[in-house]
Length: 243
Image (tube, rainbow, N blue to C red; front, side, top):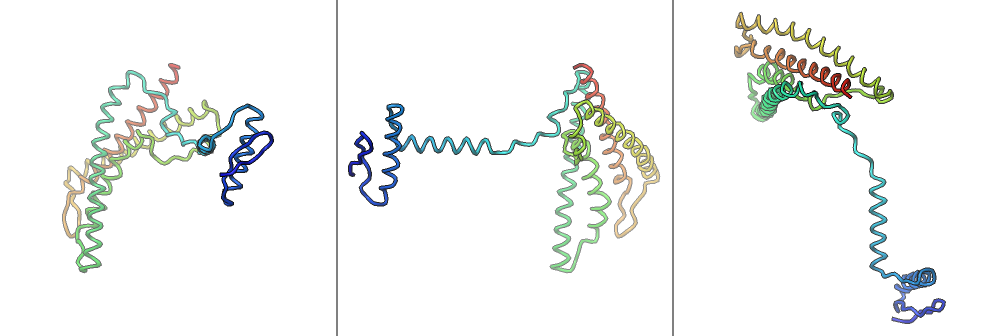
């Protein structure tokens, strides 16, 4: 180490050539701090201050997380708590059945593809079982639970441009139209499912399977979805009136 004279201060600087610039910068910083505040600063404090400044800059530059679609919804009123809990349990059970159907669909398709291209011996019943049974159960039985969690795909570009009051009425009108359409579908497909049950309708193909079981999944899923939409309409409107 060698001594470096900066103003009236006699400071130590590194003796090696590659460390001379760093020692001179540190000496100038120490001299300035001593002249202004009467204090010096250690290299460890410089590193800590640099780290804190960098972390604060990164945190401030990080984008804010997108709000969940259910964050802005009002809570359900008290008189809808027990119907909501009961319906939620039924929806969770239907969602479990849908998950099992989707998992079986994945395994059946993978096995069928492997047997087809590796051994030239595909499953003869895979298409009928997947299209007539597994897919309807996987899709329709999961719709109500997905709506309860606010995970359906929705286009909210224009809704974000209006005031909260207008947005509330947009949601109500949209939900009422959806409920009417779902009720109409439940009536139509429900009658078809009952007719298939009465005549014990069977599939025509390599294997004869009861089609009424597949058709029954559609009105069940749409019925749960309709009840969930109606509960959200009444709950949101009632909660807004009580504000």
